[in-house]
Amino acid sequence: MAEHSGNGEFEMNELPTGHYHGIEVESETNELPSGNAHAQAHEDHRPRHPHGTGTYSFVMRVNRPAANFSENVAHPPATIDPQQDRARPRVLYMGYDPADNLDPLNWLRGRKYLFLATICFMSFLTDFLSGYGVPMMLPQSQEWGVSLIDVTRSLTGNTFTQGLGSVLTIPFAQRYGVLPVMFWCTSMTLMFTILCAVSPNWIGSIAIRVLQGFFSSAPQVLGLTIIQEMFIFEEHARMIGIWGWSVLIGPYFGPFMGSFILKALTWRQAWWVAVGLVAFGLLLVILILEETGYDRVNRFNNPLHPGGYFEDKVFTLSGMMGYEAGGRKKFFQAVHDIWLVFRQPQFVLLFIYHGTTYMWTVGLNGTLISYLVPTVSKGGYGFDTVGLGLIYFAPIVAIILGELFGHFFNEALQNRSIRRNQGIFKPEDRLWGLYHASPLMTLGLILVGFSLERHWHWSVVAVTWGLFVFAAMTSTVVISAYVLDCFPEQSAITAALLNFSRVFFGFLAPIFQKTWSNKVGADWSFTTQGFICLLALLLVITVQRFGKNWRTKGEMGPSMIMLQHGATAR
Image (cartoon, rainbow, N blue to C red; front, side):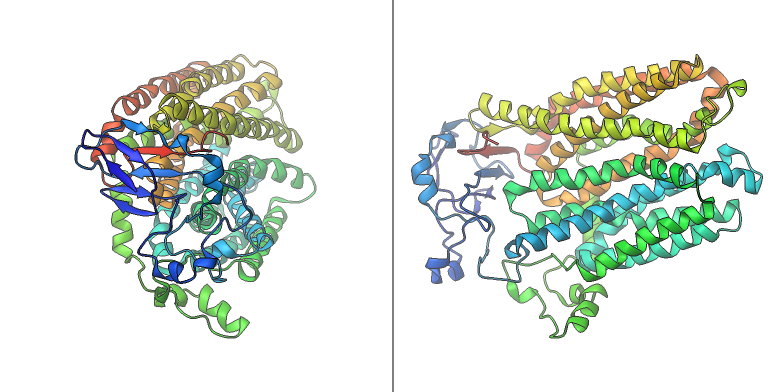
């Protein structure tokens, strides 16, 4: 166990999963918890790595400082003998039973990957549908006799309600389960996508797109929860990375694909293509997905499934399973948890930073068409639908490069922090990754503005736009990793709030960005936006300075994270 020496130090010998004076052990242990009678009664079936003989990394999170506790570790956990470590049984989750086929951790690998592919496709559709309507704005403005700026308001409303829908998804999912929320939200998304194809006028199109965005946001929030329920701790980063690509590419792949489809079809016919994609996604949700929420500590909280396939599908998809499950949070309790996370100072400051820097990404995605489509004589570039689609290839490439860079750079920062602090990882060390992202965002926005105002070659617009998107994506990786370190038990809430930050501030940008540029010029308006990104770095400096104290005083996250043998090898 963990022995307290009296001088504020802890000697790390054996730490079974559980709580010891405020210390929560979440990963590898060296012996079974004494309270786990079920596992002790089946000693030959003690939990081991569900998918092989690999070694778990030891992670100890100190939720609140115990009496006389300090960050001085007399014997860092990295000193454990690897040969002895491999011979010991491993417990990753309290109450985990490797023989329980109902536990999502024990599902077959192929089944898990099929689930992952489904949630990735559904998460991709969220922002894909939002961006898919961008190239259709030009023929819509011509058909309805309204300005291009007025037509872009449908994108603005769609973007804003995505954030609102993602936050409201959390209490319903925690009460009734992720599967019924996915089913009902996807069904409503299909209905409103059909209405997009038959919308009679400009006002009707805006209303339909607003409701479409509200219901389509659920997969991007629930995807993280599903991954955490199905995959073991060591696999989370890799699976979240795969899922993250589908989320980030969606808003740019939508205009890219829509532009080429408009070359052969009308804008109404093009929306029927999107209807087919959403209908296919709904079919995947019905046939493939199952409820992943599972109570391992008290299995009596898990309701029995009906015998037949059809009855079981109705039971889970309708939400009756979650309604009958015990131990679930009440609706207003789940809403209260959202407020508890949001009021934490380290989260609020990064919420503002993320919003005030990422908002220009949404603004550019929605308003760049008004710069590229007009003819050269009117100050534009004269892009047709094919040209408009091809330029969206620039941010797609930038997202891929940003995700690759962010993954390896973020891991390098983590390993460096662990080595320097002798096995203790300080989450604030992740934020060093934002010190290059903000200046790059500033440079990218300034160059985009001057490119548009001085009418530089379109390739310069594409490259500088890609530079800004690259920096914005790397900052997203850093911020997401930090808040998950701070709030490991509220991952879905943090994902929803960060998504709300992006879309709330992004909702504001297209409203004034084009008008602002027309008054002072694109060069000066985008330069001002760039310096806003640079000034926002002051919020990051504040979190780095005081974040440790805020986490220590708070009650929702760890005050430190300690890692054992193998933690820096990944």
